[in-house]
Amino acid sequence: MVEPSPQNETQPALTFSILTLFPQVIDSYAQASIMGRAQQAGVIQVDAVNFRDFTNDLHRKVDDSPFGGGSGMVLTCQPLESAYESLLPLQEPARVLMTTPSGRRFDHAFAAELADCKQIVLFCGHYEGFDERIRDLIPRMEEISIGDFVLTGGELPALCLMDAVTRLIPGAVQKFSSVEADSFYNGLLDYPHYTRPADYKGLKVPDVLLSGNHKAIAEWRHKQSLERTQRLRPDLLEG
Image (cartoon, rainbow, N blue to C red; front, side, top):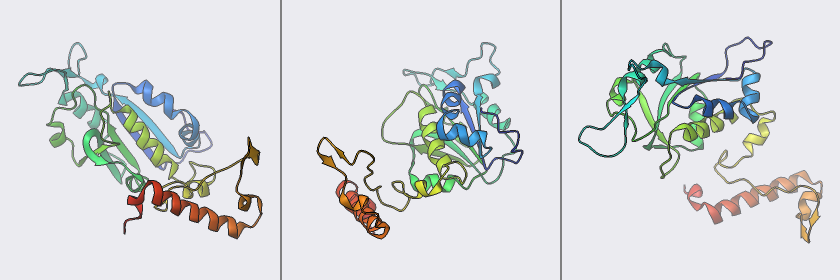
């Protein structure tokens, strides 16, 4: 976790509490770029909690073989439940999430919901996943997925969620107007972007972007967003 600036002693807008076997994965990413600056500014706080520290097992085991046989190992309930209880009481409004392939698909609308929270608790799975009973033991548990594929663990989905949500919190990004222009914010894909030089190997920047006519530029960008969305993601235009 990056320590907040001593000048900012207010409660962060949002605290991410990540229950994981690999806190170094969370910490290394969360200290960089926008998330790192947001922590320094006291906008967010990231706490990576190693639930292995909460196991009652003498050998610090957090997994066991599945009942009924089969390959792989299953995360046991006790260390996960104890790690969660160490976070109580949560800062409301709060959400409790589990990364799993069977969860609700994460998207911009979901990120916008989460940006209004004061605390997000994220359970990162590993091995063959969680003992099914953890879903009954942890109140209001929600399952999330970042796509129809399987990863080694839940840390990467957790980082994707944290990054997407952080960008939507005022103060995390220097110019919030850049967030509002991103893909999905208004339901469309982003328009094309260009920078210097104006002519690179015969590929030229559209004249309208060099015209200085801000109204014409805005109209061109909106048209490009519509055309790109229609061509690449027509499902976004339904309704």
